[in-house]
Length: 291
Image (cartoon, rainbow, N blue to C red; front, side, top):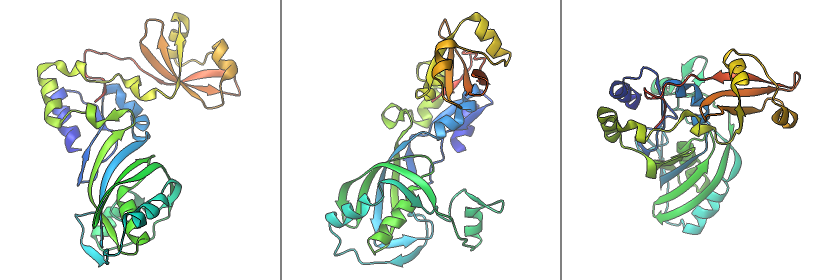
């Protein structure tokens, strides 16, 4: 939210949102949505992510990271790179993960981190999360550096804690860098100061992504003037070729014949029609899109 506040001031855009919280110790990619692109926040947050994490073995903490109080210590002298690789491999695929107490999840209307700060620990249900790929990149005892490709809702701090438990010595997250969030990579990212400078000198148009950039996994429809008018008025429509192939609940991105991003539509299998889900009226004179 500190980033959002600064970029609101810099851009003059009232509607600004971030695409995925970073832990206090973390660096790396933080997608920022401006204007009507904030309506696509779920598509930004829901994308896969790549992290580079340094896990310090031999000590667990209450926050599961280096900012917390040490709760247990263990011996790492006998741990080999092979031990770490075997333990790490167990976290690949669809797994069950217990979120940390210090998290923004809610229990009975209260944030878990508020309960944790009050000294209250509650049972957390394991959640299904997906790890597409996980690899040991370096072993400099007692620190294991991991690269992780994961889906939505995966906690790197829980991974650090669980890895320490699996190796019988404890562990916590020492450092974390988000290398990628969806289509956005750290190599293409701007620093916060650079982003503010872009708004100050008016060059933000050179680096901002169109809102539909985050919808690449959806099929695209191109519509003429008649269907454009129906969509803008919220009316369902039939589009011959795509309607015959569409699946119930499928979403498509829609463009006009001159290439303007118009809407997201959803297929109603009962009516065999597309109906507007989100319709956009984009004014590219102001910041609208994703950094």
